[in-house]
Structures are given as structure tokens and as C-alpha cells.
Length: 249
Image (cartoon, rainbow, N blue to C red; front, top):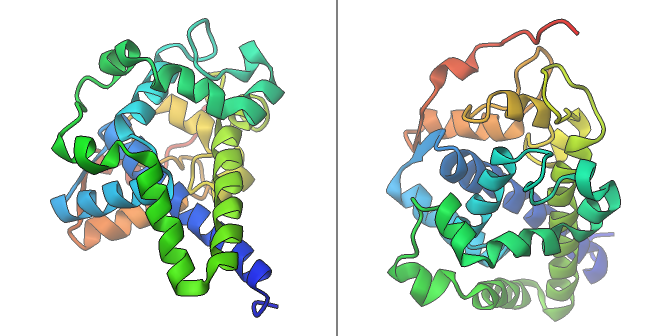
């Protein structure tokens, strides 16, 4: 089946989506937004470049949107609350909701003041379409234009839907072991490198580990722990490796 360029393109696109999702949770979320990790300079450079090529996201904008969500969770001012806007509006329109804050320079400056644009942003990383174009061109060189096109569409659609689901599903369906408005979904967590454990995250937003209860799986944390053992990064809160029992309902 993988001899078919369309099937192979779908597989490549889904794998790229998983790589991008892992980078999103480790780099954009746990490292930049919540400062739970300190990355070595080489690793930070690699993740910064891969973020540009795989998503076109400007990190300071992503951080600003996410920090605003934490500052106004499910109340007026939340950029993407399904409790305020409706599930469909967030699941299907998350990109537009994201851009409302990301394109507002005043809000980005307020919520991501520690991430000002540098010369590399001005030269390369603020040029989203250049990064995405380079990624597609590389796939075309490696596997041909059909695989590149199918992989690009598959990656884009799955990445956007999964990220939207963290905001939509993560505030509507799932367990709530801790008293906040977010929910845990282990299925979503496995598809998003741990991000589906959203109730846990809102309980301990600065923790590098999203799994708390016994049996919860956080693939992003596995990668972080491996990186720490290799000396590629430092975990700011090593005590989070201890299992914590949720309060009784």
C-alpha cells in the first residue's frame, strides 16, 4: 500500500503532524509559555527552525495566545473558550480565534514581553510562508510533488484539528480530577503528545509533566525525560516526576 504516492503522502503527513505536535508541546508550550524547561542552545535552535518549517508559527504569538488563555480561562477574554463561544466555533474556527490575538501587537507585547523579535525572526522566522515552502520543497525533492502535496495537506489538516481539539474537547469532554474547567482525555493525549491531559495542566500549569494520576500517559514527558538524561535540557521542576493522586471527587 505504501507504494501508492497518495497513501505514502498521508503517512508522511501524519508523521510530520506528530513531530510538529511534539515540538509544540515541548518547545512552544512547556518551555516558552511556562518556562518549565531550559533547553541547550543547539536543541533550542533546532526546535525553533523545525517550528518554522513545520508550522510557520511565530513563537511569541503562540505564547501570547496561550498565556492569555490561562489569564482568562473560560471567562470573558479567553481567546478560545468553547464554554463561551460554542464547541464548533473553537474546533472548526480555532485558527481565526488564534489570529485575533496573534495579530494584535499590543496583546503580543503584553503577554510575551519576554520574547521580543530578534534578528533571526526579522531575517527568517517571521516569514511563515518561506519556512513552509522550504518544507514542502524538501519533501518534493525527497519523494516527488504528489507525495509532497498530499503530505502537506494531511499534515496541515491534522495539526490544526488536533490543536483545536485541545482547546475544544479539552474544555468540554473528559474527566475532571481537579477543580478547574478543563478536562482530561487520554485518547487526545496520545494524539497530542500529552496535551489532552488538560485538566492536569490547568491544575499545575508550570509543571513540565502533564500526567499526574496513575495510568496517565504523557508522551511529551517521555521525550523530555530522555532529553534531560542526554544533557540536552534541564527540567525546572524535577519533583513533578512524582505521582500525585487527584483529590477524591
